[in-house]
Image (tube, rainbow, N blue to C red; front, side, top):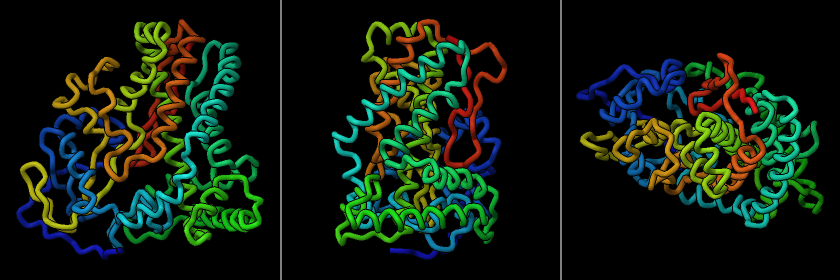
Length: 412
């Protein structure tokens, strides 16, 4: 049920000077993380609106699991939401509550059958082998641009979504390219024309594909989703939103996780050798890489009542920023949190895939594909290491919700 934003009275709240969307934090999160964990929760003002920042691991868990007390549905009229409204105002799985969330998730569940996942693995291995053969001839390469990104696009765009025609792929590429423009918006600003045009082209494509699905002529994921809908039809705008959720969540997660996994094996040759001797360790390496560098930095919730978190009360109606990436560095849960350690007994307890009802629906894809990548690379390149150049590792912090590798130069 849609709610309308009502400002929270900040009387009595200690307002701190911190901006989770600020470039200072996005470019150098380590400088802030331990203080945020120690003082969590803290109160800040985002676009003039009193808001809570939740950073400790136990508090992250408490908020993410309490879907009744902390709603995922963005209130109408909340200033600043223009910057993260990637789905043109539609309440997609990420920003919806039960029972609407349950309905949306049920519609896309057929896309994640074991048969489809196995198909993705088989095709990914073929492409990984082909890419590594080409990269071996170069000696030095950008592991993100030349390896993990094309692998992710092929796996998610071509194999999972089933969008194979270049002109159709470009529709979605153009939309994703327009998303950073939202970060420049101020409260009340209209959506950029580039964003709206790209969205409109996507809606037209979804409408065409749904028409084909009714005739049994649609072989991509739109057809699968359309067939699973209870009433046999999904609004074209909603279908576009679903495709973007799966595309953004899938491509960026797989590409970012694969690049992070390769970064840490390149920096730790002893660990790479362990994985060569015991390929099953690649799974733990990927989990630790996801803890160190979660592809999603934060998620938002909205307090539905006065709720105690830690030693403070989060007032009813207050926006809450749940700092997933910060919580993954909580020393109370992950001792020596900045040490990369695949032998942690709780190596899978990170929050990179979220928690509770909104746990990432596609996490099984990442947990299958990325260990395959790590195993293949360490086997093919026993001398893998970071390239000797100042820009060998470059991070992309162009959007406030995510931080992942932009370039990763490796030598073989």
